[in-house]
Image (cartoon, rainbow, N blue to C red):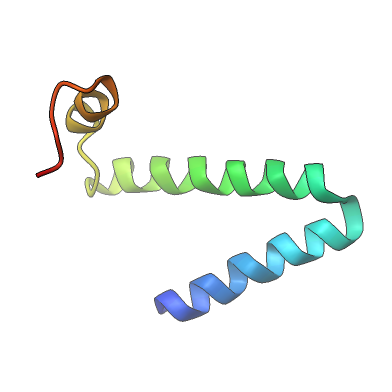
Amino acid sequence: MTATRTGIMIGAVLALTWIVFGSWASLFVAVAMAIGALIGRIVEGKLDVSSLVSAVQGKKSSS
C-alpha cells in the first residue's frame, strides 16, 4: 500500500469516526493510531527505542 492510500484510509477512518461519534472519539482514534504506528515500527525494527528515549530526554539531538 502506498503512502497516499494509507493517508486516504487514515483520513476516512477519522472522518467517519468524527461524523458518527464526535470530536473526542476522533481524537482518541488518532492517538490510538499513532501509538499503533509507533509499536509497529518498533516491532519491525525501523525505530530505535533507546535513541528515541534519549531524544525525548534531551540527551541527544537528531542532527
